Image (cartoon, rainbow, N blue to C red):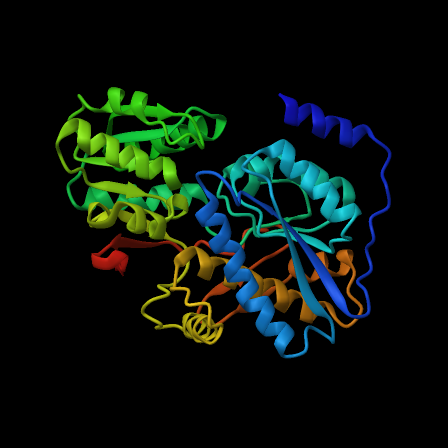
Length: 374
């Protein structure tokens, strides 16, 4: 309740003018993300992918002579803190746009603020239907929706003859909505939900969810939890039941984190991914990403979430280029709303009636040493 009271207070408050024009030398972008807590790994990867591309743009002289500077603040997965961070990014840092925010509750809380200040809200790391159908002209998403990911999973498992599915989710509005999206898909493909378990978000406390699902005879377990929470559930579930389950998860589960923290226990977990394989380097954007990753000298390994951040940054910069040498927020939004771009084997298309740029979904499996199989 606290976050919505804060948002209403902001919406009713007098509007303070936010700097709209970029400076002569730089364009400031603002990010609020969960750099601490159960989902810190995903937030850091999404940011680092963006920085990898922004740094290369700056090395080449920027966009129309202006360097990109990303200001990142930690919101600890707390929507009220994300709102405070957003105000700071707009009013104190003069952010031209907000980009690479993480998670659904944060996106929901920030969209009214971005809308009030008329600041673009670009590429949040979510897939929630209400965010994707937002009436705000500020919101542009690059990744496929949760619904598209869920349908890809259910379609895949049913072709394998799997019909009895258990589901672990969060005790939250997002968890309720995910369940509501899942049920008609199960019916559509002739599958059955044989049990649900729930756990608190950002808690790594799966005891109740395990108690609810341990007696259930399921052919597969669908993970509606992410990060450290997913790691804790898998470890606890297998210890309690003495059996290895076949797990399926959406991309934001954090496949790299699962592989790192679960080790061999992660082998065989199937995960949807919303960008091309960063390890295979089949498409040009994956080749470019790996080339810059290697030349950065940081020793970082390829990662889907990092590549997502990279692609989103590349789309953003292409829109800035097309906006011209004197960009304004209004001009940038106009450019985005009519933009179709291929960033190297990955196409993104926006239109006035559709601000979701991609429906690309791939199905992968965590293999040995954590490398994806697809």
